[in-house]
Image 1 (spheres, rainbow, N blue to C red):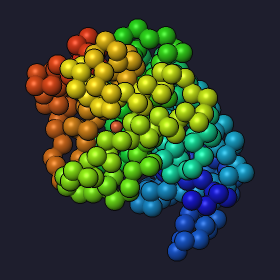
Image 2 (cartoon, protein in one colour; image 1 turned 180 degrees about the vertical axis):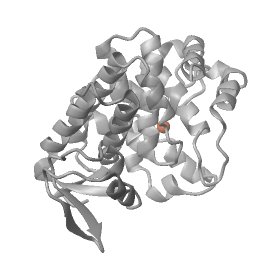
Image 3 (cartoon, rainbow, N blue to C red; image 1 turned 90 degrees about the horizontal axis):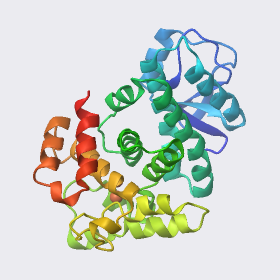
Image 4 (tube, protein in one colour; image 1 turned 30 degrees about the vertical axis):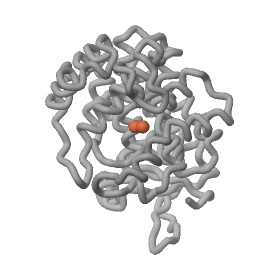
Length: 306
Ligand SMILES: [Fe+2]
Ligand SMILES: [Fe+2]
């Protein structure tokens, strides 16, 4: 990652409005100036850029970029579905940084603002959560996974009666729940096909690794629990601690449910994803004893509303 630029998803740019930052594209590993701050992009240009997936903004203009995103989210004339897309696309860059950037402290700090925007959007737009859920991509990247788990978790938390502050904790816990995968060999993370025993043993360490990473920072117990306890099971046979159901942190119970749901509905190279309906059916029958029954009921409610 070049520290002079940060990457931006094309999906959070909008046509025919002036953008208050410069844009660069990467050509043969070099950043090439594409648009001057204060100019606008046509819809045709945005469509063309979409094939490159990422564009770049100078790090010195990060604040201008954030202000732009914030302004779009506050703008009454922008439709909720567009706002949901802007929010999602602008978040993916941050979530990517959480996993790629060694500076976890900075990512933890940045995530506060981000989750705050999500929760505010959910509270202001009645259909906001539905739009966010329908934008879930179901593909196999840790960052998309963390963001999707976050969106579903917020949906459950809201119906479970969480306060704004609690929702913000929960959302951050979701973004960081798999942070321990930073310390697992990338070959294991990316392996196509089933893991062998040795690989699986290392993979199962990610909740402990995550706790170690987060313990170096000023992070709440709830966020640590989302990370350390999201593979516990209500049956008491999860890992790493084999906690009985009533000892699993309530927020970690939500992450456990949304994590499984996302994994089941996600395309991986070696399996066919389940449809949301089938995944919920499977979780509420075959797997039901593993989860908090009330939260499972709420998951069904959140998903079947769509
Ligand atoms: Fe995990
Ligand atoms: Fe996960």
